[in-house]
Image (cartoon, rainbow, N blue to C red; front, side):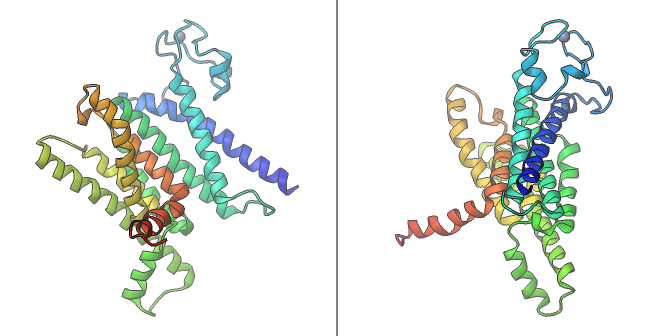
Length: 305
Ligand SMILES: [Zn+2]
């Protein structure tokens, strides 16, 4: 019975993830074109303008059944549609798994809402990555509400902040024994962790953007990324968002070098997708990565085992 509940639970996240991926595709197409996400309600083929029939709009399945072609004009449907739906579905499953690993216990409400919040965060990362990759902008309608969502959700679901030790220490320092109730304390600590994380994300990009402009005499990192890393920081807290930024720089360098050698300019490579990758890695594996980066690796460098 418990096994069945878990299977249904994961299947729920897989299918909601695919459906949300379908919505993400609409957002990725419409937001940079200043079109409303919910009007027109029905999606249409960008080539012939025909409305897409409901049975041709089933996430993942329809793309395969239609063999990646429009039913009416046979224009090719971009692989991006399938990729975004698959990615979203996969991220939702990982979030569900992260907050409720399979075991004997059935999932509880808290882990369900934590997984939903993390999934929504992943969806925002996916939408912004694909828009940034194609148009080199990150839409304000996602990252600004995203900052508030991160802060608000951290208060409602304090476990969303996975690394609150530094803020806890800060609270002990400032408030000593004059604390509220444990219920409120945990929430205020998570809330502060989220706000400090958002500020850290914004400041890091600001510093790099200003330094880059001084050194390279042109925009090395878009100021648009300021709000974006602030959103990621609101969900991750200050330590994890810093490591997410380092991951983004490392992967960005490895992926960016061949692009640079092929003749493109540095500022033509969008940084958003790399920030998203760093953000997602830290959302799910933050504890392990932080342990490696801040404890194992320094010990190894210092020559101790
Ligand atoms: Zn068509």
